Image 1 (cartoon, rainbow, N blue to C red):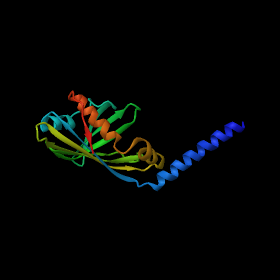
Image 2 (cartoon, rainbow, N blue to C red; image 1 turned 90 degrees about the vertical axis):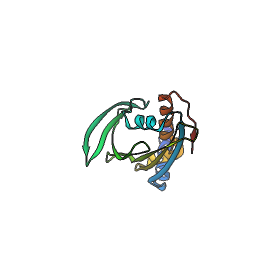
Image 3 (tube, rainbow, N blue to C red; image 1 turned 135 degrees about the vertical axis):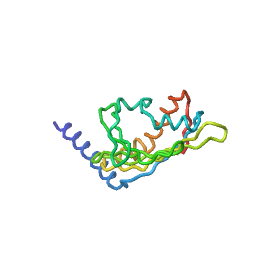
Image 4 (cartoon, one colour; image 1 turned 180 degrees about the vertical axis):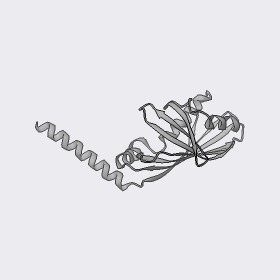
Length: 171
């Protein structure tokens, strides 16, 4: 019994310290990564603007009715969490801005996709995340364990796989 209380006490202390550290971190963050692809900017844009069936973390998706003139859709991940997104800016073939439209999630924000022709052919894609993490434990985990760029890097690797390429991710 004494060991059980000790283990519970240590767990409670660890969670409390993580919550305290997370509360001291800013709610908002900015992250950015870039990769080069051997496809034309138009082809890259078409995949980004199309269905997310090529992404490993998306298990299902669907289109929603437009709201305030903005395209909307949902994506379901491997944990069965559905998130609604909306297209904030659409400037083919060089810029997309997508925002999480769900309110009340422990996180939110927007991704800006900027596509530029690469000097030797192909296209460069920079993804910028302007995110918010409201839950202090999630904020702590994102900062110290996962990193703010983990989702962007996974997205860029999935995109490379879609085109049959190994991508080199830059800051």
